[in-house]
Length: 269
Ligand code: ARG
Image (cartoon, rainbow, N blue to C red):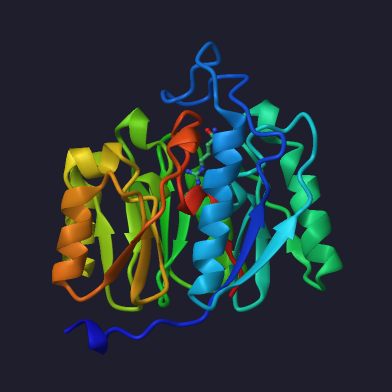
């Protein structure tokens, strides 16, 4: 069955964790008093980049800026569909300066960047499915931003409400497998949003709480290979049963900041 899954080459934008640290707490995973192993974090991140390249994907990098310890989480900087860049406006003042650095990269790469008026954290909460945008709200990105996103792209935006502070970004609770399917953790969503997901994706791969706590839903799929936290065991085997190929990449040091594989990866479409 796995030979029916076809990967598509991707272009990813990342940011080296040169200044990565946990210096403030803006989500329940962050504990500024618990040390981060900076060398291990760098090694883990390098392994992720190598895994992408080994699978034929293009990886571009933004220069990290000192004093911005969360800048490694490139996914939060924008959402890019059809070469159009919808920038970010961070909820936390600590992260707001990151946007300028990413915008500078996009502009140098030849893209115009739309600056949102409402709080909006890029692919952290705005997930392009190939047909529409699934948009999270509840902790970071606002409903006003969802409206801006729809107006900007002219693609339908489906608002989903997140209810568990551990899963404060949509990309901690859901990821896109391919043009037809997704995986998600139902309990992270309000009852109505759960129903919406059930109607849109009746065959979705459902994750357990353990999978979600391991950041298993913060995964990146190329349509066949799924770059996923090795601790998300049940989810990995469920994906393998469906013909996907789990590629385990351990980013345990980044979990201390509330991040994982997808958080470190911005897709340029
Ligand atoms: N410490 C960062 C924050 O709370 C982690 C961001 C994780 N990124 C993501 N796409 N979920 O903003």
